[in-house]
Amino acid sequence: MIVDSTIRANYANFGFVPYGQTIMGKLHHDAEHPYACDEFAEGTKLKRTDDVSPFMIANRGQCSFVQKVRNMENIGVAVSIIIDNRAEMIEEILMSDDGTGGGIRIPSMLIGSKDG
Image (cartoon, rainbow, N blue to C red; front, side):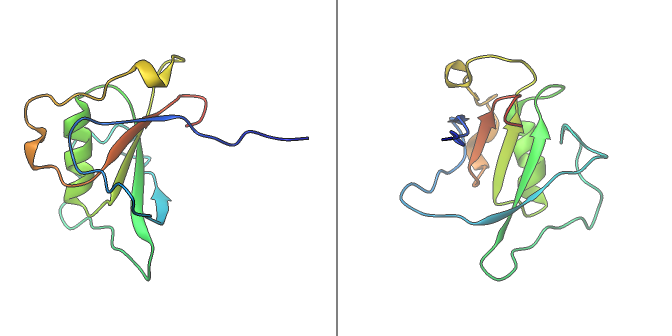
């Protein structure tokens, strides 16, 4: 039996996407901040260890994509992954800049609710 393990994603139109590079990461999720809309506690930092960067997932909703990604970037996240809150064609959703995303330096993507 062949299983398709592809996770469809749509990249944000803000931040930096390292085309042609590989990023290896360890996935983090903060159960106390599932939407990543609030700033994380003072002193909260995720650090790269060996060749593994911190990735973080958060749920879609309650604030803009930019706010979520900025909060994650501020604690050292290398890649932000947002899980959609509806069953929809992920390729048709635009992770748009709310006008404040110019300084974001990490890539971010939206994945489907089923894959999340």
